[in-house]
Length: 269
Image 1 (cartoon, rainbow, N blue to C red):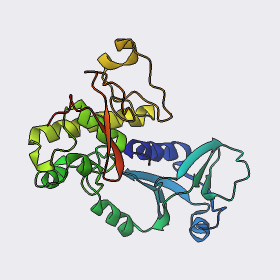
Image 2 (cartoon, rainbow, N blue to C red):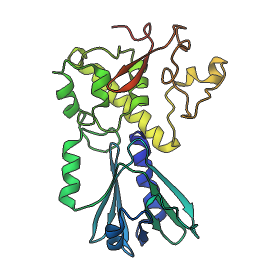
Image 3 (tube, rainbow, N blue to C red):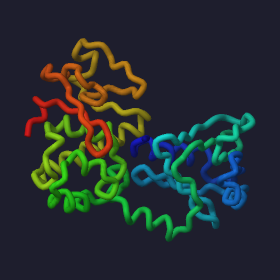
């Protein structure tokens, strides 16, 4: 499932390609046809992201709410657009670009109050200016749940997925099985600030890189990572490989329905 930096990048990409101009909207698959007809010819004048939720705003019509889920894809191309396949839930076509949405968990036309209701149920997002990390801390500080599970709970903190969860805990030497209430306020502040920086870089580069400059392949004289996920990481998808810092074998286990990765030496309780 795409993590929050991807969704914020998609919001930027839509504004760059279609913002302030009318677009043609259609639903070749047919599941969004009625709403697409309402959007057709309207101006796309806003794009918003909160966690893993993308919102496209159309003047006097509403917001298209998109959640890609595990299988959704959103891709762009230049016009003239080729004939769409029957798997395209929503196609937007502007003067120079088009966008095709396939296989989302959610694609729905919302009113402003309906959009706000989604924001209200999500936790603070490290990529949303002004979101308050203390909202998340108040829940974490009294929770017996592991910090690894809390970081994946979108009601606690929005946008963090499996990669950022594993990597930010490693970067701060925090055992993923520590209860939230066992963290200090200082540790939480450091985690949040690091997520803000890492995820902003994720938006800029459109990929996840979490290793510090002194731990890059060039700095350490090691081979670069080869993985379809891309990006240089410390522990994510590195089960049974040696830790870049201490050489201990990286462990993996199931936690919160996802594979957790950590170094038992660098992340002691």
